[in-house]
Structure formats: structure tokens, C-alpha cells
Image (cartoon, rainbow, N blue to C red; front, side, top):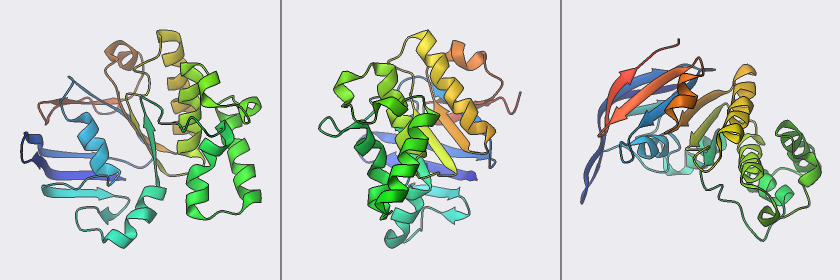
Length: 222
């Protein structure tokens, strides 16, 4: 599903964010990405989501070489990757339903199919009764669940999460991880960046560790 081959990402004013990085994540695998602040976790996820391209090396996702993928094919790639962020990135002036529906609207789905999929996604994260509410009325955990529903509503084979529990207390963090585990059990590939070493250690999944842009640890599947 994901393969990095000697990937380097360099920023002209800040040097290398990633250096000669190589690893492979199989389809259907769930793994954590950890490391100190500034280690390169977010940069790695942005390369997979094709928000940025590598300076050197190859990033392969679902058989595509992202370094050379034509611009016209970027929207197709992004429809196959669900992104979840620490700050939720919800639109405050849109309802929960409208926030979750955004990827489907952008992809041109018909209204009936949008409604069916949005309701299914909200049901999956336990928020079916909140579809007409606005994000400001929700708790932090509920807002993160909306972000997860938005990421899965188009049924992408790959989910990337960047510090999804960073603003949540331990109990809510475990609930969110439980949602990710359910997605994993139905065959979705997940790569989750997190600082929460205690939570990661309590779960039986592979952990990739970055230090200063280099891969210094890979537990494999425990």
C-alpha cells in the first residue's frame, strides 16, 4: 500500500525534514508513527497525501509513484486517502452533516448517495443524532469523531491521522483509538502519528520512530 524508497524531503531554508527514509506498509496494516516534535512525522504524512512531493527518492502509494504523478491525477489520489488532523479543521458555519459531506460533494456524488453515506459514517462514529448541529456546540472528542467520519465517508482504502488524540484526555484518546481499530478490522490501512507513547505501547501494532527526519526504530507487527 505504502512504500518509501530512500526518500529525502528538503526545505531550502530549514534543511532536511526527512533523510533517506525507507519503509513499507502493507495493505490493511495499522501502524503508529512517533518521534519528537519536528522529527518529520507531519512531513511524511503530507508526502503520502500528496500535499507535498519528495526532494529525492520514491513514494509509492497503491501502485502510484507520487513523485512523478501528473497534476491532473492528484484529485483522484486524494479521494483515496482520508486525512484526520489534531485541530479537526471543521467549518464552523456548516453543520456536522455538511462537514462530513464535503468530500462527497467535491467528488460529484448525488444527493441521495451523499445522505446515505454521511448517515452511515456518522453512525459509525456514534454521532448520528448530531447531523444538524454545528461544530461549536460539540465537545473536543465529538469534533474529532466528525473529522473521522469525514475521512471515512468516501470509503478510502487508506487513512492518515496526524496527532488525532493530541488535544484529548486519556479516556477519549482510547475511544478514538477504538474507532481506528474498528476501521482496521474491516481492512482499511491506517498510519497514525502520535506523541502518546503510553497509549501506543498498550496497543499491539507496529511503531515507526523518527528522529531528526531519520527512521531509527521499526517494531514490525508485535
